[in-house]
Figure 1: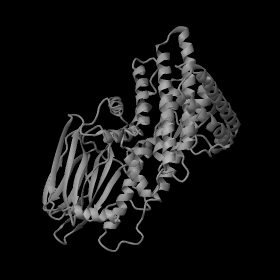
Figure 2: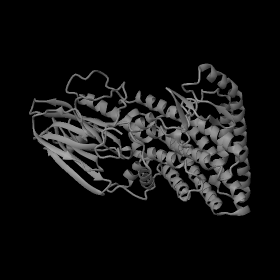
Figure 3: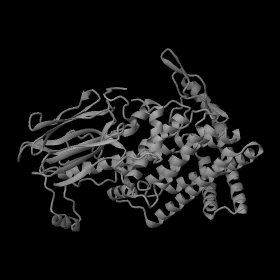
Figure 4: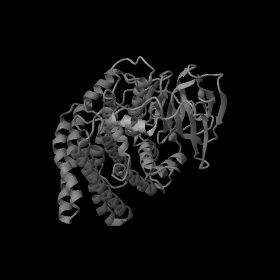
Length: 586
């Protein structure tokens, strides 16, 4: 799969900052879209941060970064209904944040936004200043930057909520995004902003490596490498502040790596101590100066809270041995897997019609999809944010992971996930180009073509009338309307073409003869008994920020009139779509 190009990344930035909006999305869906697109914000930054500081559009880029960060913070405000996504996960795992915890998180977000505003004003003053005034403003910019990243470090500790880690993972991931973005910006632009090299080396660089796992858990291979036969020899060393560490690579023996590790261990610890002391001293100076200048209580309060928290946390960080610190991506994946164990399972083996089995698999599909959209995907990019190191193809492959919805109705044929197994990581063979729906009074068979290859046909290959949907270049299926009962009754596909801005629907195919939804009276009775009717229903199936990538019948039967008795859907990120319409491999 091909990384996004410059034209696509510019469109992504516009989308994320709501300079351009997808049609037909309400306010809540736009909020979800922004979070779903944070994955691509990482790609945007990875692409743009390697730009030379004097390029004409760098000012535009830096201003855009502030808008992105601001949107990430505000996504959790009460005005956005994205909280419903977290509520859905809380309901799944029976783990709900308490009112006092939400109040603390709201207080932290207010501090983050105030710091961002203060930092943005300092950056604008520095950008507009000249001569001696620029040096003075550079000092203010350094102070505001240091204060904000220290506040973010402090807030991360509060987001790791004991016994509520899964429910609090969304706040953790959002805060981690801002923290890592700002560290990456500091590494890329700190020198041009006049930051002392000591600060860049001992504070920003060390902190970035620690929280992303770069150079320890994550290979740090510079973009400039030379090939020598079958071995890869790094052309230059990876700089960790003032110490030099060579990454593990073919061509460097174990003894060399071991001796190098021993040689640098002490210097890295000393460097960490220098960085912690420098960061805390700058924060204390900012508090004293801020109080004398009458800065807002919210801003000063966030600095004092951070100073208090980090005074304890810094000692803990310094006592941790190399390689034992749990970086942000590792934490996100660990909490995701822990949350999976909390999703309710059937108490006994399903012996009847499979509705409860399908409902269980649907819960896991929803949990996996939500956590992938809002936490796992963009954590993949954190270590590579500065643009200095090669982004392994596996990172893009994991970010392009297919997520699922369903099965709806019953059955588990062709379902690749379970209560004990995450959905597998598979390659995208191309964008979805064709959908074949065989239908009569029910949906009889389904098949899709991605790129130039047809996927496996599921259901009947002979029953029903074949209906072929041919998608144009840029045309993506963003929603499927579905009804089901004894059989899958109807399917309707809603599409949007990003190139022509046209919307079009196909269907509905089939009928509601065997898919009549329950009456309102019966629905109310079920609700009173706290039960859900999995045997009949209608639903709009979609994953915001994702497009349909597969559809398959999970059970087909000839009894009570033939037809599919269950269906499931796969989705992949819109903004990692293959650039060529019918490209099989990229």
